[in-house]
Figure 1 (cartoon, helix red, strand yellow):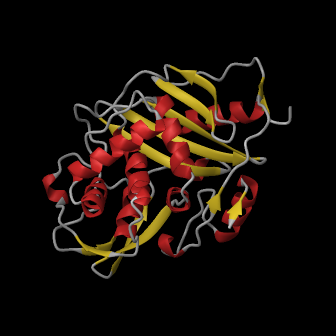
Figure 2 (tube, one colour):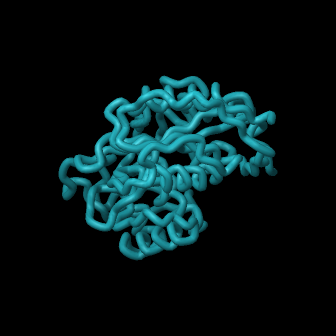
Figure 3 (cartoon, rainbow, N blue to C red):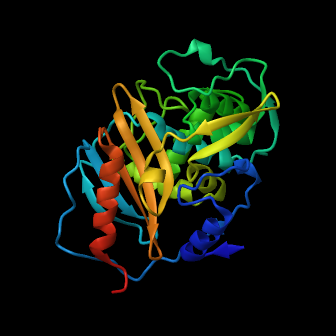
Length: 295
C-alpha cells in the first residue's frame, strides 16, 4: 500500500505513532506504511529571512520539493555526533535483516567512557529491532555498535556500507568512521548533507515509526526496558514527526527535526546549537508561514 504524505500522517495519528505520541505498545508491533510523496509544481518563498539562531550551521529542507528553503553555513564540515545513527539505520534497513531476529550481545557498555548507552552487556539476549529502537529513541551507542556488527559481521564492514550509501546519495561532504557518531578522525558531515540523509531515512516506515516516539519499550533477557527519547522536540512542537538528537564534546548539541503541517513535511538540521529545540521550532514556523506550495 502506498499513500501520499497527508494520508500517511492521518493514518499515523490513528495508530498513535506521531507526532511525538507516547507509545505503550512495543514499537516493532506497529503497522508500517510505505509512502511515495508527490512533489509539488513549485515553491514560492517570501522575502522574509528566517529568525536568528544559535547554530553554527543549519539547513531547512523540503523533501517533497527537493529544495532547500534556507541554509546557513550548511556546507561547513562538522562532527555529526549521533546524527550519524540516521545513516546507520538506513544501512541496517537496506540490508533487509529480520528485525525480529534474536541476537546475543557482544558489546559491553562498561568499556565506553562518557557515552550514551542502553547498558548492554555480553551474553544479553534481545532482537535486532530492539537494538534499532534503542539506537534511535535513546541514542544508545552500544545498541548502534551491536546492530552494526550483527548486520555486517563487524562494525568496520558496516561502516564501509555507510560510506557506500554516502557515495550513492552524492553526499560530497560526509564521511563515517564508526556507526554510532562519537568524535573520531574521518567522521564528518554538514547540515546540508544530513538534511538529505534524514529525508532518505524518513522514506523508510520502520525508521519513521521509531523516531516519532517519545518513549519505547524493548525486551532484553525477556525483561521490559522502558526507553525515553532524547528528542524533546517531539513533545514541545505541534506536528513534530522526528527525528534525532546528537551531542559530542567536539560537535556540540545538534538536532535533525521534522514536522508536518497542512499537507507538508519539512526537515531542519542544526549543528552545534545550544538552543536546538527552540531554534528548530522557530525555523519551522518561519518555513511554514513564509512559503507557498499552491503557486
